[in-house]
Amino acid sequence: MQSRNAGTNEFTLQPGEAFSLAVHAEYVLIEKASGPVHLSVDEGGRQELTAGFAYYAAGANGFSKLEFLNDGAGAITVRIQYGWGELKDTRLTVSGVVETREVLASVFSPAAAKVVPAGGAVTLSVASAARTRAVYKNIGSSDVALSSSGVYVGHILAPGEVFETTCTGALNAVSSGAAGLVSVLEEKIA
Image (cartoon, rainbow, N blue to C red):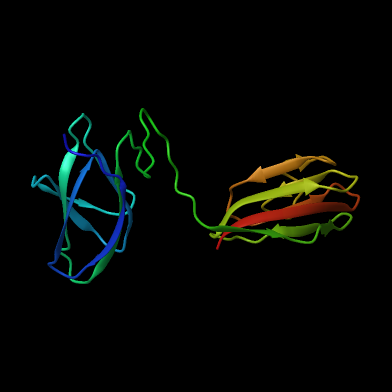
């Protein structure tokens, strides 16, 4: 019976160079690789792997020979781990329906509270394609209208109320007659 092996190995492959390792193991994990490396197990077909990928040969026999090949244009350094037992590689594995959305780097920009003059209007946010979200809170003691114009129409924001939007257009606060105070928090793409 062949003895079982476990361990790690780190090596550098020049372009076109191959590295063979005689081990009796059940898995090999590419812990680190500065570029793609091609792996052949027990002289079988080659598969391209990168850092985080693993090969697992379930069963009592495992495998006995690994060969790594660099068919790229530059040198690559590879660190592997091999051994016995079940292995979950370092990639995320999911099943079923997975909803995703792209998220861009963003920055929150809190501005000083905006004073809405009695009988007047103030610009809360200028039009900005970079803005992904804006949050407005009436921190004053009178109603203000959130409007794209300077007229008291639109969403009436009562004292203490919060309004959140993904609109990228300009937005004004218009007083109901008494002076108001509105805090503004904008999230923008960095």
